[in-house]
Image 1 (tube, rainbow, N blue to C red):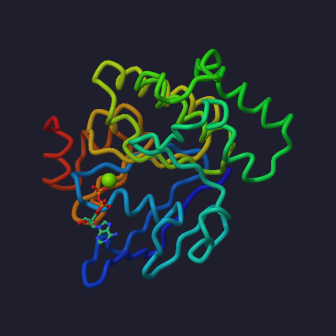
Image 2 (cartoon, helix red, strand yellow; image 1 turned 90 degrees about the horizontal axis):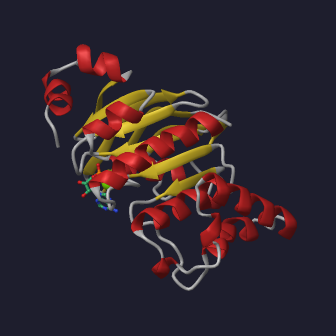
Length: 238
Ligand code: ADP
Ligand code: MG
């Protein structure tokens, strides 16, 4: 496992600065929620950790390793997206096994890791199905399973629950928290949902217009907001 450190990280697209001098240390094993309104730069921040966006300036570390120039496939991370991004023509098993096959993990080990992850997520009876034969919640579990079989140093989750209905969302929130308590993998979880942030985060980073306004525990954010924006954002429902 490893933490993630941003040192003066700036991201711009042309003239447009999207992330301003981000300084953030996420210790090993922490569940960090990055929360803020749409367009504030959450996904871009996460995508820099994944290597899907280049850092414009500053330093980004995974553990002790400076990763600015490390391609995505050589970073020990796994990302879960809002739209699941499952391969429609592959079975659940093959979807979960794909990343391991790519990394030339031996077949017997792939088999064992996929079955174990599927069991953890309660989808071991679905391994032969194709994504189209699954419910939204089951698909989201497959997407999570595909990430956990990789046993990465860092999980990156970008609004993973926003396509689910309200009831399932609450259920999956608890399930992801449980998974984190069990695996203790450093996680950066992006959401625009205040309740999700407050219930899931060990700490929360509140972002506005590419600037992190406050990084604190949910209690501190709630009781001692750093400014009016944080107070209003956390105080009022989405
Ligand atoms: P969030 O995830 O918080 O909704 P994003 O990180 O997706 O925000 O976007 C932050 C800002 O960066 C937005 O203004 C968006 O339009 C802009 N942006 C994101 N990706 C690109 C890109 N590839 N090219 C230009 N602008 C982008
Ligand atoms: Mg986003």
